[in-house]
Amino acid sequence: MIGQLLMRGLLAGLVAGILAFCFAYVFGEPSVDAAIVFEEQMAAAEPADPGAIEEEPLVSRPVQSSWGLLTGILILSVGLGGVFAILFACAYGRLGALSAAQASLLLAAIGFISFSLVPWLKYPANPPASTFDDTIVYRTDLYFLILAISLALGYGAWMLRQQLLPGLGAWNASVIAGLGYVVAVAVVFLIMPAVNETPETFPATVLWEFRIASLGIQFVLWAGIGLVFGSLAGRVLDRDGTSRIAAA
Amino acid sequence: MSDNTTIPALAPQPFPLREVTPWAIFGLIIGLIALYFIGLEQGALALFEGATIHEFVHDARHLLGFPCH
Image (cartoon, rainbow over all chains, first blue to last red; front, side, top):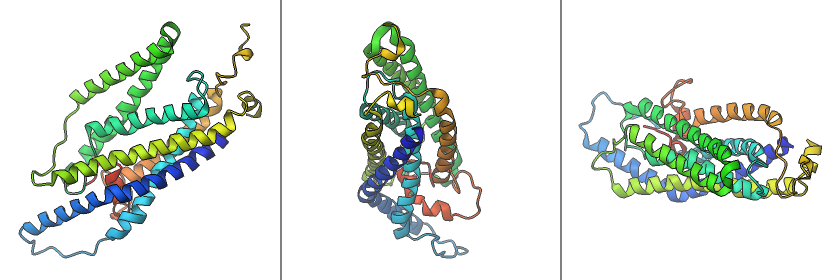
């Protein structure tokens, strides 16, 4: 039975990935191109290095913005879809009287907030030419640290809710756990160092559009997984809540 | 009516966690490998020489919010 859920999770990830790719291609790529134009202008303004040889790019721009983008998004989305199905199998039946579709949407909302939104708020996506090349290791460490902290705090909030559930009821326990998560995230945001490397001459609209498109891609991804998986899983699980146990 | 099997049909029976554990471990490992190749390889870390993987997933890495050059 969990295998059937996993299959549906992978499928939901595939559908969500294709949707997210379309969104990224239409709304994200123009700002990537604009950032690369800025990068080339900056390079042209610098005195030419006599030793530099003009190199053929390893991967052309049209390939980067189509097949490369699709591959990267699909690997992430299908992987997320699979992990989502496993998490769903853990959470289903432990979230109160929610149907499969409702539980799937709730889980997707939690995933969007803790995996995408919170890391994005502290260390938002950066277009090409808006960061220093030699801080990549530092920035990567910070990004994966905030990702890990956000997921751990999300899990902590869940545990807190389960602790408070018997005494306070579902609504109060959820609100208090949610507030606890927000406060803990705010404290972490204050403690962790800021990254601000964008050159002053970098076009502000490009930076804004790139970052909003980046958040939009993540939203489409999670919304797609939550909706598609909920609909597919509902057909297996809601038919009969007990036959599931017998079949497993 | 304290028998567990008679709880209303609205609250579905959860899967036993023991049954989910092997799937969870496998899923976690595959997920981490996928994250590594989209987010890190030939950027902050490099198992393979060159920059072809980096350049191929370049736009996805930027747009998905992973740190890049």
